[in-house]
Length: 101
Image (cartoon, rainbow, N blue to C red; front, side, top):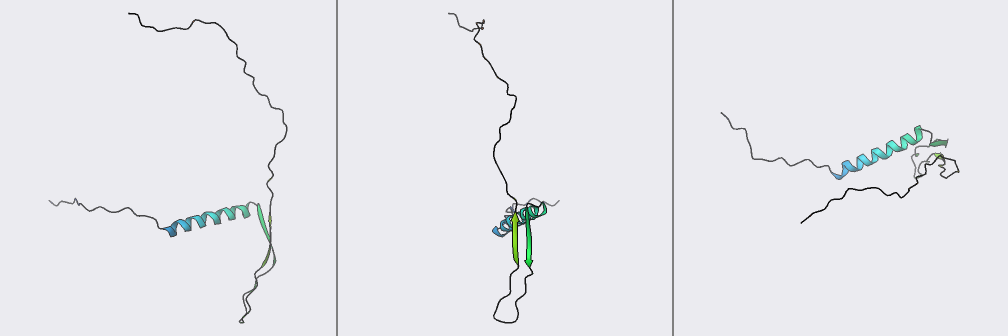
């Protein structure tokens, strides 16, 4: 019979810093996508961008007007039923525990 046991240990795989950065960027992109998809953000492009011509002058970036909705936080007066708790003092018999000699 063969002995398949081994004494070698396999070190656990560790994620590098690059995979953490990729995960953070994907989460940020997903949040931005949700904000645009729900209409919380909207972007109006005024003119199209252009690639640079074969010259020293660079290209033009598109002119974008970004509109975001405003979140309003505040308070208002509203009547709500609130239970009131009242306490009273009464004399009652309470069991006691003692030790005799």
